Length: 243
Ligand SMILES: [Fe+2]
Ligand SMILES: [Fe+2]
Image 1: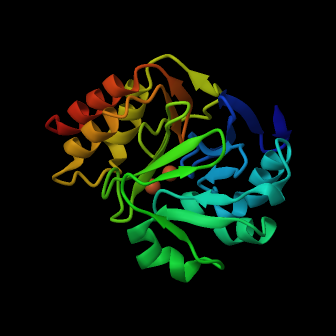
Image 2 (image 1 turned 30 degrees about the vertical axis):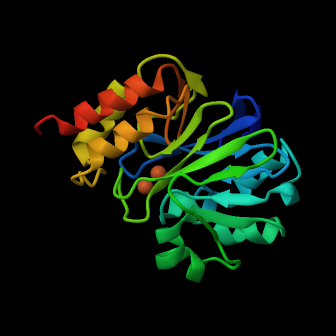
């Protein structure tokens, strides 16, 4: 479903009750790129990352095409960056019952100050019941970047909201793919490496692989379905390879 013809914003259900909102953009060098947000519809609906502040009207209209915006209860973010939470306060204004959801470090260093309502900070491994779906927080400091970084797993559908992991260039016109995304995402990463390459990066990816996700809800490019544990292990190997 296209929700904005001019911008090309579109919405597709990629797992049970989980909707990918995709907006293609042109980078300054003319290459295509995309921003995705994910809406989990349940008793307590959750948005995983807000999109940039200037994109708020597009994302709001896309959410409104699926459910009333005011129903939103959780506005989650991986780490403090514009595409993660630039529109956070716009969302808090549009959804009076919503609160930010983030890591304890993100709450401490940024979100408690920046957000117009106090955040709910999740500890590593903490679970949150949204209704039919239960999500689990994973602290992933510096993976791919940011001391405050964490990622969310929907344990009910084995969908991993993997943020900037597996970032692919292009418009991401295919909502959900089963083709390789590691090759395209590595081709995108290598010229402008956005990973922190912290000492525990491989261990963090191995811990995420142990959760055996079946769907990867990527922030940039297509979402992916398949053996997520194997793909995460291969990502760890690619990052460990000499540059
Ligand atoms: Fe990021
Ligand atoms: Fe991002």
